[in-house]
Amino acid sequence: MTTCMLMFITTEWTDKQFLPTVFCYAMFYGGFGQFVAGALELIKGNTFGGTAFASYGAFWMGWFLLEYLSWTNKAMFPGVQSGKSLWCGLWAVLTFGFFIVTCRKNGCLMTIFSTLVITFSLLSGGVWSHDCEHAAGYFGFFCGASAIYAAFAFLYKAELGILLPGVRPVHFI
Image 1: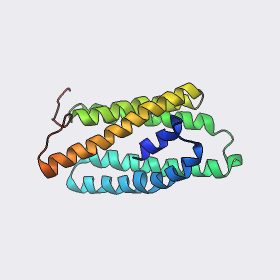
Image 2: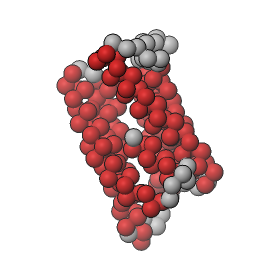
Image 3: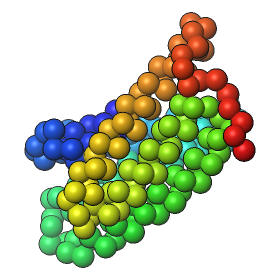
């Protein structure tokens, strides 16, 4: 949900004045909530889920702090553009590594991680190009919407025995 909310701004579906709302969700839902989910997955023995949830939880907490500080005190971050571009590029590389693992998981996870690689790559270029950032918004929104779908698909499978498309295991590698 946090990704979708940020993409409302990136796609220009809403004004940047919505950013404080995204800050709140980034810190607590996208950040802290995912970090806790990652810890719980590790306790269950799910290394992939634990590592991915904890990583993206830490990402959202870091994103919140960086954006909040840059937004409230622009003088502190005059050269942040190149750093943000490199940062998004590193997250694209990390996410690609996670994507490889999803090729033995299911279509839902493959969709989420492949579109997140594209989103981070476009966001990296989007620091320098408005059109690239705008495109990132659409890919990011699709990625976030796919994650919401996957959450319900996995929940419905576990709790109701309903198997929605994309949940069946795959073994592409």
